Image 1: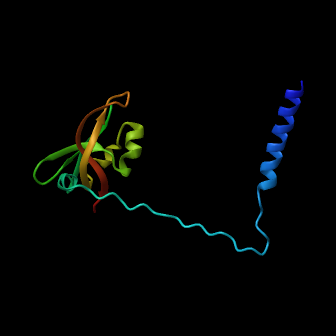
Image 2: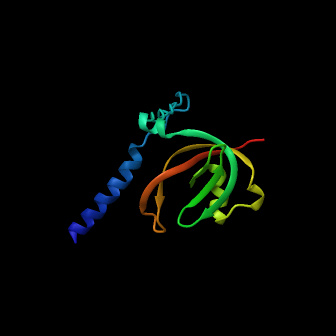
Length: 136
């Protein structure tokens, strides 16, 4: 019984002691200022820079399975890639693109993306469209 009472008193002492040790700044004391440290962006490797390119063309089609793909027709050929650009987000969410987008001129930036299966497991790498801008 004495041990239980001692443990309870000790617990109360520690609980009250932590509050007693917390000091509030004096009303006339200067406030502390905090500095936000911004991380420097990662530098791309030479391989990543070589894999990145900008293309212009017209939207040809958009289709989804486990991943969503956008195909554009450039002056030389058709390019298909994972649609990872911010502009693709509503299309990916709805698993479809409005038909009115077909034929719209776009400028895209490509890079290497990761294809994933339905469970989210990486299955391979392929071209991905990282940015997408509509051109008039």
